Image (cartoon, rainbow, N blue to C red; front, side, top):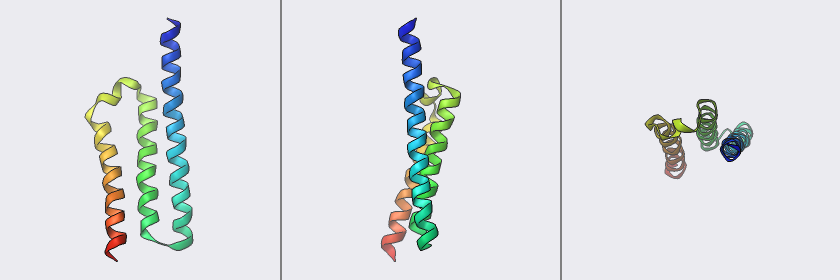
Length: 92
């Protein structure tokens, strides 16, 4: 019983740490966007905000929801945004 509680607490802690990290990165890129008005930073900020919201949803819904397909679709959307931002930056 104690190991199960420890495992649940550890997973929640890691999901919270990932949420915090993705949020900090989104704010970091958002700050660069406000300084430079470069779309590249705006798209990166949006992508990392989506990943942060994904981690928050996993934290709220529980670990078992990670095996559902919508979680991967949200992550895929964030990575597609990053890819499009890179392609848009190199096109100019």
